[in-house]
Image (cartoon, rainbow, N blue to C red; front, top):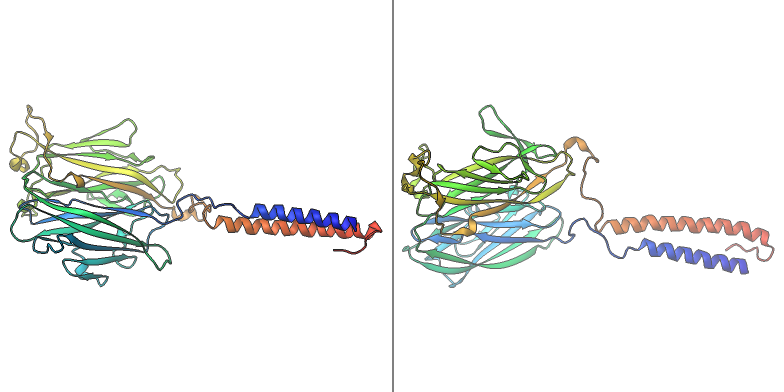
Length: 406
């Protein structure tokens, strides 16, 4: 009986030790396992006299997967009703069955089936345009609006929501008002026969993409030129910078000065076929490292713009191609600097022929890792117990003291 008791004790200890190993104290995660996001509303200061300005609701996804739905609600709160002064509108909501409400209070839903390009990728940001339509007599005004944004991931039935308040202000300022929007870089590109960029599919390791940014003058005064500062995410480099750009030593920062790129107020841009413009889209070609592990979202990109002016009347700027030799462009005044800067991410996809290798998905170190490891170790524990049991049978039959197998 002694040998049987000793075997039981050893087997129990072994099983308990292995069971203890099989139960993880906490799962390790390569990314935050809890979905999260942030949002801001930029461009809410409007010069008196401007009847319409486009602000942007910027939703940044901090989770490790793309949401299946983005829902946002807009409601004025102070004063309770300022519909006679202005309204905030998403101009596409009239064409969608996923929107409801009136000009004062409304909501809209973006899904994978409608405007899916506005669903932010993991680590990426979606720029949703919101129009500020001014009503009544142009005069200074200040109001408050509350915006609630909700995101849903995967098969969840409830959304994660966040609410913020923002100030809408009409100011008596006759300066220019530049804004910039830089979407996330998701596509690889090439230069076509016409000299225009053409998309060639998702951006893969080693390929070239384009940082595009749209600059608009939504103020009351023209600028005679524009300076754009572009900062790339770590690991991404400029492919072929324009001659107007000075590249930093690390290859990730560029200051591009367009002395003769004049932008007039939108109400002066009446003929799409002339040389007078209120908006322009620029781009910089960038390259992703060939040895980067995909899929991955490279964050930290930024574009910041600043208007330039000179002694030459800014309204005559469109007719001027270069600055005079004795003139130096200086920063122009800007009514609303909150929308002069926009962040972007570079989204790198897995190469199609990589299969299960060559980067693959995220490492399995999140919530699934614990159960998988526990199941594997439990099988090992059972195997060892059976091995000890087999050895016990051999000892029992030769001991002479106890021939009862446990």
